[in-house]
Amino acid sequence: MKYPQFWLKASPRRKRGYSIFAVFILSLMVTLIGALVPVSPETAQIISNQLNQTVTEGQAQGTLNLDIFVNNFSLCLLMFIPIAGFFIGMFILFSTGQAFRAVFAVQMASGAATATPDVSIATTTIVLVLIGVAAVFLLEFITYAIGMTESLWMFRRILQNKWKRELKWFIIFIGIAALLLVIGAIVETATISLQL
Image 1: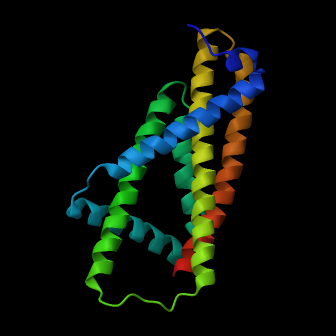
Image 2 (image 1 turned 135 degrees about the vertical axis):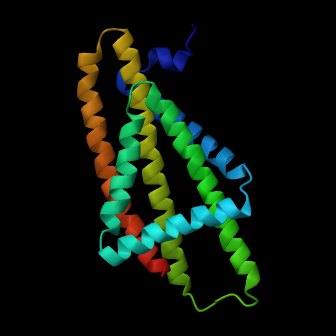
């Protein structure tokens, strides 16, 4: 296989960076494709209800931060499984796109049912919610890209019988993923509380 010149000249760290960036872009594309797949109104309502129930229960029990982190970190750990994690991650992100569409469809349907929109929400709150959503989105997708990329790197190192050296990076990236997802859970919880 002939590799591009930029890849051949790159250091191993830079190659990892390129790999993470490529998987990040692919992740965005797969999520977008998932969001473009039609979801029936009944399925959309079920997905929306499940998400709302999870948030409501987490807030009532005071465990929303932890619930969000545990959910995202357990999904992320699956993405670290050599080679399989890449495909698991892409399936999860496709499903995430469908969930986005479902929630959007339910909100649009309920918004269309109300004649007058609520304009009492402060512009500052809207801006903060948008910043929070963007930050969470970015943190989670970068984290998932790291997991899926490391899945591919570990698989390659296993084939090369160099997995022991890769194990150090594997553990480092799991630690980075945990840190990013903790930050993401805190921001996501704050964003959810701003919306209420």
